[in-house]
Length: 333
Image (cartoon, rainbow, N blue to C red; front, top):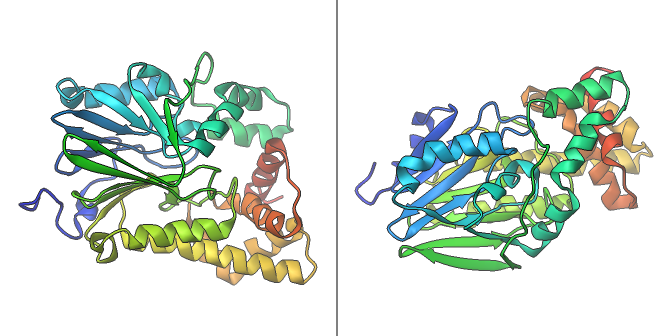
């Protein structure tokens, strides 16, 4: 580690992508959960003399308790006083109830969305009869988590735009960049450490999924990460994605490239008169998509094409229908 507490350029490659807590800068930690697929999200911690800030909890209370236990040697003397949720997906907030004394901070849009998609919605999805292919897909994605009995407390502080927190003399800069992946995505930037917690604006080696959009906002969010400070631009920053291994500017650019490819390709297929379903089939076998088939959950293309078409035509589809589309694409149907 450099004298100013930052990791030297390129050190992200030296931090293994292994489950657990990893120090990425002075007093800054990433909690990683391979393989980064459905529900296997990352979180983080900033520890200061005046207490700690936790960035995101995990998909259920079992996993969140395991994470908090791993952090206990640090948080025992630097207790968690603030939880920042990067967005409302359950794998980033369903563990909030284990920190009843902490202030919970997120965007106003994320707070609204937390109430709209409670853990009981996942229980219902797992119990639904959607046909064998879709049922199997949903069970593989979510069957390993425990959603029963989870209550997610309402955030205690919300904002729009930007919010700066100061903890132990260290600045924690929050910036809303949603709607993009979800309605209320935010970035967490620690300028003095050269660290960015990107939430699900970044999936590394996994496929982004556009639950909300517009896609152009997500592209702009990637640009915002690249513009945050010189450390990001020159590759010296440590960027913690919502899913996948630690990354740098190259990881941001890869997500941006996927999104711009998606948006452009869908405008072409729409102009050619293809339906969303036909566009999914054509794009999945296209030469330009083949590099992205190497990413985890590539079948999220079925949701992403529909999101791009929704921007053009309006309309919406139910969550069960979206999972059916992904399941059938993954199964080759």
